[in-house]
Length: 470
Ligand SMILES: O=P(O)(O)OC[C@H]1O[C@H](O[C@H]2O[C@H](CO)[C@@H](O)[C@H](O)[C@H]2O)[C@H](O)[C@@H](O)[C@@H]1O
Ligand SMILES: O=c1ccn([C@@H]2O[C@H](COP(=O)(O)OP(=O)(O)O)[C@@H](O)[C@H]2O)c(=O)[nH]1
Image 1 (cartoon, rainbow, N blue to C red):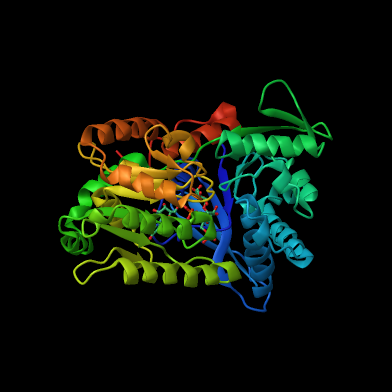
Image 2 (cartoon, rainbow, N blue to C red):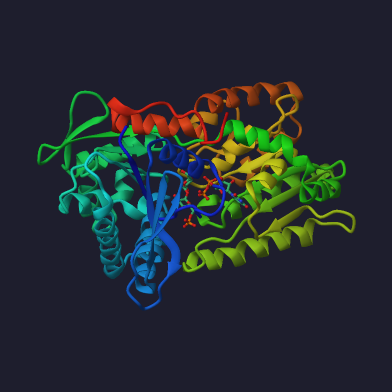
């Protein structure tokens, strides 16, 4: 079996247990085959040029991390990746802030990563590149003579062609992506949008079937759908174990008999926080008898604070949460708690299990792993209800069991909350079982094996779980 090289902007800390299914699955794949995980170290080297790659060995996995300069971070990460591609792919053309200098910085950093990776690549290594930060990486590697199989997975949505084609330099970026052998997307809708962009740009023609393409030079590549998932079994176990955790026990004691509604999202305009909080307020206004009987916990760690929109959103959401508390609260009851910090997966798993309702209402989301984690954490005998945006990638799989809402419609969110807090146990069980069936089959190990199996069909064995699993 050939080695695997994973390349992503963020790399999990090699000194800590991996948090989250993606890191667990990729580490399991790397552990089985041996390989390298390369990416940004998370550190800036200021005005200096980045020093050599820092290597760290963990069993059969080599981590290869590079610092980036302030200029690189400003142009590549905060600039083109997070102020152009992120809003564009989340259908927020109004927020895209295109600057040619940032776009050039983005291509420059991709070239830099390719140059650093080149000496580490062996002849039959498989290379798997992740996410919108690194879309042109295969093209840069090909220019350096790399002929290995290279796959790409897009974690965020691929927008409709009319949205994508507003991007200056969009054609060049799209063209560069034909250098991959396999391009994976979260949903059929994303993959179909990408295929249509290729065809409209006359960059590739489709061969027989939906997935196979030939570019203008005669190179073949594939475009497919691979919905990412979580380590379902482990998440369910975490949720059962956690009641012993003192933080969780103290929190539970504060709830009394109230129903718990929970939201867990990075502070990001794509997550629909303002509409969601307004939907909750509408619920309390229209269903005043629920006052004192529910509490809404919104966990929102800050994110990407170098980007202007994220700083202003922080103020807007904090003000709205304060306003709801101030106008709807009573001496003996606070309608909501807004917490701006991150919790461990173990604490989250227990909070999910305690929660009667989860509000997952992004305006647009590649997948949304929180939705899947919430379902996996439930007690099947007495499960909670998932209120889910129809514009989250997760809706394609969880739709039949969740209460699907239009996240722009605050009245619809209020109605869904009303339905969720009043739902009979039998209906909750039925809905939960439908969602769990899919998650048990399509866990993150299935996702990983499926992608690698398509990238290199002759040499992939199924991954059973993390390295130390029984
Ligand atoms: O690295 P950051 O800039 O701090 O951002 C965190 C990650 O956010 C994005 O997550 C996406 O991937 C998830 C897993 O596939 C998916 O469920 C979610 O819908 C996406 O938004 C981003 O794509 C990652 O690269 C970031 O590391
Ligand atoms: O306090 C927190 C909040 C979130 N998460 C994790 O962050 C991930 C968020 O992934 P998702 O796909 O929902 O959205 P993203 O932030 O990647 O856009 C999930 O695994 C959460 O469990 C966490 O570990 N601690």
